[in-house]
Amino acid sequence: MLTAPDTTIRLSDVVSALSAALDLTEGQPMGHAIRSCLVGMRIAEEMQLSQQESSDLYYALLLKDAGCSTNSARMHQILGSDDIRAKREVKFEDWTRPSLSGLRYLLRNVLPGKSLLRRFVKSVVLGAEQKRNNAEVIGARCERGAEIARKIGLSENTAQAIRSLDEHWSGAGYPDHRQKEEIPLLSRIMNVSQTLEVFANGRSPAEAVQVISERSGRWFDPEIARIVRTFHDDDPLWEKFFSSEAREHVLRMEPGAAVTASQERVDNICDAFAGIIDAKSPYTYNHSLGVAAAAVEIAGGLGLSEQTVTFVRRAALLHDIGKLSVSNAILEKPGKLDEEEWDKMKMHPVYTKVIVQKISGFENMAFVAGAHHERLDGKGYPEGLSAEKLPLTARILCVADVYQALTEKRPYRESLPKNVVLGMMAKDSSTRLDSQCLDVLKQTNSSTDVAARQKAHAAGK
Ligand SMILES: [Fe+2]
Ligand SMILES: [Fe+2]
Picture 1 (cartoon, rainbow, N blue to C red):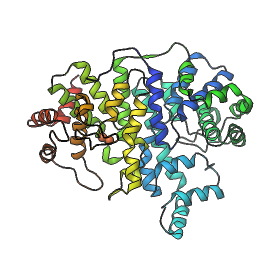
Picture 2 (picture 1 turned 90 degrees about the horizontal axis):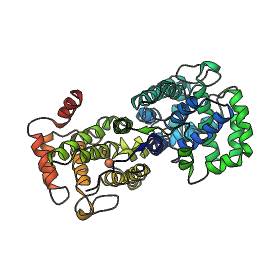
Picture 3 (picture 1 turned 60 degrees about the vertical axis):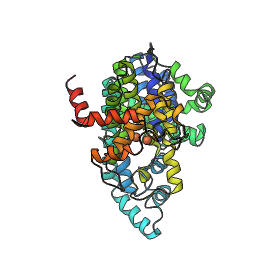
Picture 4 (picture 1 turned 120 degrees about the vertical axis):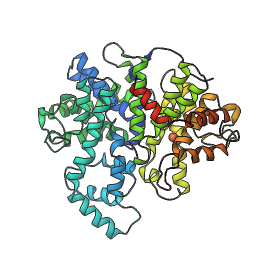
């Protein structure tokens, strides 16, 4: 049976690995947060920040986009388009000033496929409503990001740095329109670092340094912009930045002694990321938690060890982390997905596996989490694995996922009552879904609601 070894876990290992999912939600290539951290640590070195400040900054940079999924559905609703593409492209825009480039951005990202006139009218309306919309979508993201940092036990300085990430030196930022030194120093460094990363990786380091210079005194603290000007020929920095081992460099750069994560903290991180995943769409607001509750119920009912139950619960909490790569235009499409959309959807367990397996010692969990859409008859996805390749832990997750998904509402159907769901699943017993797992689920459902009992159990702890 596949379970996790009981080894010491480094907090930076877990957080830096999972940060790749936040990058995907923001439309960034995986590694964006890690590379932003590399740049931020270089600025911290130049500014001679204390070890504690550097450590607070380090974790704030890795988790700066923790609130990212909170506004995905709303952005999709406001623009009527692909939220991930819109988020990716806006990073290259100076949206504080009206410009031709900004108008082109709106025309590309507003109501794609509709007539030019409709797109133009909607773009003008959005231009007029920009401040209100920004306050709403950026505000929600900032608050949620800070909340997540606190939930996983990071310092209040780290939480506040994440909360003020999008403030601008001029006062034109969000959520509080703070100005100059009113903005936490760590947030000022982070804003420069993330912009530098986007332009250096997407265009070139020279262009990135140029953009920071141009926005100095408006977006950015002039002193930090001055420091960054010296980076254009900092070869060791860019070597690490463009290296395939950027994450290893970041792990080695952790300020002070490496922070280890207790088992309880790892659970809190998995819970927090489940919340990030579930917040992506109103249709999945409780999905990962519900799958975890059902998976624990099955694993417990099968008499598995406490260690295996913990393993299954964590795998369930993270199983859809790759869904953060899928646009809400697809997740919330009321009709059938076309081939291209379905191909993107089918990539989500692949991303789950890629992201989770970056954590040392989590390789087995990555396999199980990434196999949640596989079926015993080999007709699942993404790999079409058949029964002999699917260990019991993976089978538990497959059953728990189908069960929870069918009891939830989707854009194309209503939620289904549990007895109907179990009846439907019984038709796939042994052929597609593990019969032993299904039997346990049926028994545990015969008296009380699984999620409610799990909740009551958690509350009573
Ligand atoms: Fe899934
Ligand atoms: Fe799922």
